[in-house]
Length: 358
Image 1: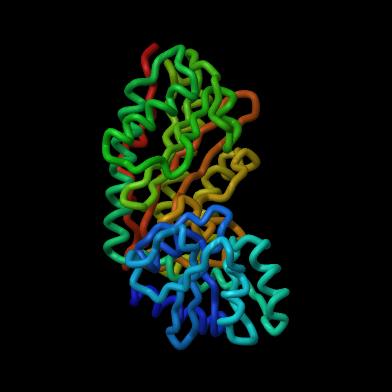
Image 2: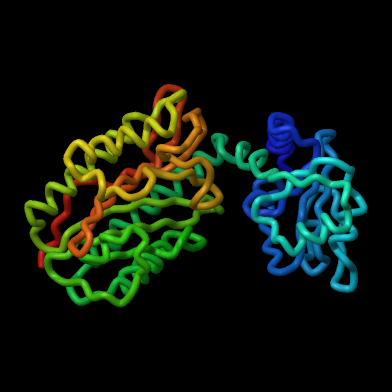
């Protein structure tokens, strides 16, 4: 049991005004217990209150007895798990995990009309937001292994490969480096597909003149990495070079803006301004970044609407892009960690324009 992290969650509960909460997201349970639990359709919930009372409610099928060092309340498929949980809760306000299925939430409220549900996730999200030194080191290793994997993948690009085959190369190379799997399915785009920021990797064939976006991440000892590089098959056109240089400059400007006390919206603005000033603002159609850690997308957003402030221990992406419909797109993404006096870029892979001979 991670007692220091639990204390921090309790402190956060006080800041958002709740005295008891239920935590059920697998990544949050791992963060507090050191144990990954994937419940499927069955209920799992950690109860925590401001007095430090803690219990984990879980089906006996998960075989957690003796594997977690917190009080365990087990049930089986012949029992009503929600009724067991409901009987132990105090009346009044209770935090509910934002991802807890409604099939449990609604039954809980039916069983206990004296409960007032609120979204309790901010207390755990705010705690997970600040990585300790052990977490930061795992994030560094994950990112460096991702660097190595993406460079090995780029080295194997050749005409005639499909997007799916390039994704498979990435997965094979990351596994060879000891990754426990991807942090998300590799997003590989060729040519006009690069103009779709969340294009689903398909069987499009690589041809001369294509831009190639590789947006990839792996998991190392449960911590995620995420990065993007864009390269060109053959000589890049003048327009491709111009767009690439702009996006690379926007990435650098965004990372340079990261310091403790700087609002996330200002970091977004720093990257976006480079692209807007060059007349391509309408082609940068997503936020500048997102938090990352045990999950590839975590709080906070790096966007114009974000109210978050950069503080030491935060990790997030800086990933500006330009997407020209029907033509091509460019994105350059790195992860950063906020330090006491600035930021550390976790990715070391070069950002120089790459033209692959054909």
